[in-house]
Length: 177
Length: 157
Image (cartoon, rainbow over all chains, first blue to last red):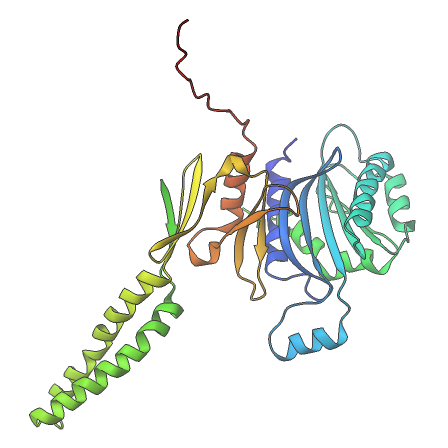
């Protein structure tokens, strides 16, 4: 099911900012898919790339000598159907991402799930306690703008480097139109 | 067929600048032989080197590097210079993505299967808005595929 216009704009903005290199301090994402299916789970945005960025002259030399060259990905999905986002729905998406991590031999992946409802305490607790290294989780409510990230380096970088809060703020103020 | 294109100014300038310099040199020699060595007439004549040089540069640019993406609901074609570099039907492909090259330039990548055969449409050489065009192409790819029946005459026995 296609996400509603509000979520579509948010995902468009997230993709646009990634194309412009917002994630470059963590990963150099260079390919962007929409409506990407992993088994029977659909993600509204899928981006893939590597941890070694491209740059020019000095920054390329630095990247080549100092940065590891791992394959990484970003998945973003919008949950709008039915009631609150549940831990079960989140687990299903995490399984799909873990499947891709194994299949494509990724070092790690970001998973961002947006919901048009308030986040339930179970989801907040589950995400904030999640600490496996290869998957960074970020869950946000477009209604309340509440955000929660997993308790690992990759999860914390969603808030720090992808500026999800700013994107949600822009949506709330109607800046995305 | 719809067409997306734009003049790639840096390329056009690169092709034109040697001709501008050569034209200026030629005009300068001509003026020197005619005895025009100073004054506004000389400047005006030397200024003509720019349009002359750009005209030659533009001819070479159009023959070698000017890119156009032509498409309709069924087919697409990438035309560069005086030749077609890519053509095909949307129905031959199942996935589409936006791909950035090492300089951050945006192209549209069409896959027959994920990580399989693909072709790239160089959006950075046109005025296309990558996300909008990708969404349009995605809607074309997700349409149900209809097979065209070729009716063969059958001889009555």
